[in-house]
Image (cartoon, rainbow, N blue to C red):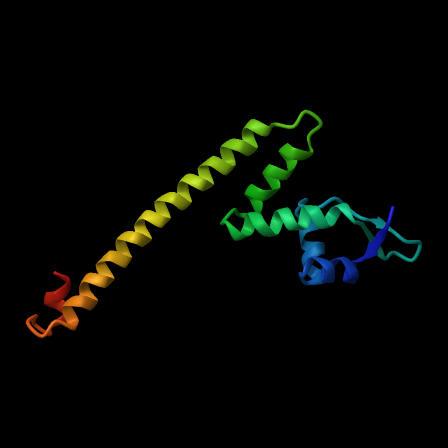
Length: 129
């Protein structure tokens, strides 16, 4: 099995090397093996885990939520129902956020159209009331 030093795996995952130690401390990645001189040696499997963490963060999961998901996945009898429900909740949250953003977008377009309509009053306060 191929092993990578902290700097190598960090570069491959496009993260800061200190982030690996942070993830290790917070049980997001397993503790790496060590050389006789104490250097951390990470397996290639850590890259998959780091990619999972990156994607989960990107869609808005907290590190604690990610840790819980990884624990469920790592468990020999994986609690995939927990993972599914967690993903479903986040999906629902994002749908609500998108709806709210669409509403804000609509309001901004209405205000913008009123501002450039010469028949409208130029007072912004009146435009948004």
